[in-house]
Length: 351
Image (tube, rainbow, N blue to C red; front, side, top):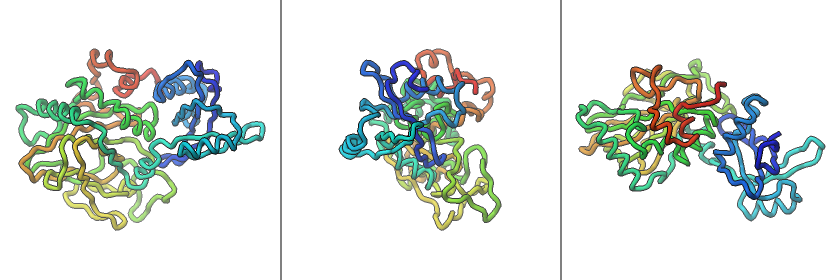
């Protein structure tokens, strides 16, 4: 069916292991020589093509583009896979034969860590120029604000350096692997933590989505569904004195309400850990993990840019008072690429 799409020469559809959902549908696509869309562009085209023809769970979530024939002899493909450092997959065809394709694993380690620990730290996703510009933009947003004010947003209204974070090529691609290609922005706040301040009470974001009875736990083979993902871009080198983000690894699977506590116990023997990041790093985590921002004990404010993404059906929190009426300013929407527009809520897909 996918070969009906313009520009696609061959396609193999197969099941791929997912650290989040257990399995997902993957399409390996050979394009015509004169066609060169990006993976994200091709994913959008495939989603639009399939959405009224297939159930959502059967639409490919992962797209791999190849210039190699997908009908080569297995031995030849196997040697190519070995040289490329990839792994091979076999698929039974409708006629009973075996078709082999090679795939490059995207975010395999990161997805595994997210499923197991509830968070992943991406290193060096921003350069020095970006961190400097973002930090200055947040500093200006807080001018005239009391030290106890710790959030300002939505920050994409404050310039293109912030707009570019909405669809950061690495972070948004990872988020889409987890939440799906129709996910959207929930909020985008600049954060400033001054001396003796911090979001210091332990919490999960929004609500406890999967409460479990005391003493019960999910089987380790069952991935925890993810509805909200938080991305924190660090704009300073973070030390213990500066009030680092702290998490309890694995606690996204606990299913227990923690009531905004100042102190927290261990989960399965694992206590809190501090994320000692460097400027330009980004921490991405499941909203259900127990986390907090420790109090800043230094004299230097700590600046962080927060971006939260959501499943499409969850209400956004762009502001604290007019979420139902909020709309992205038209000039920002007009200059945005299709992916960024969709992430900011301009979606042509109703269901």
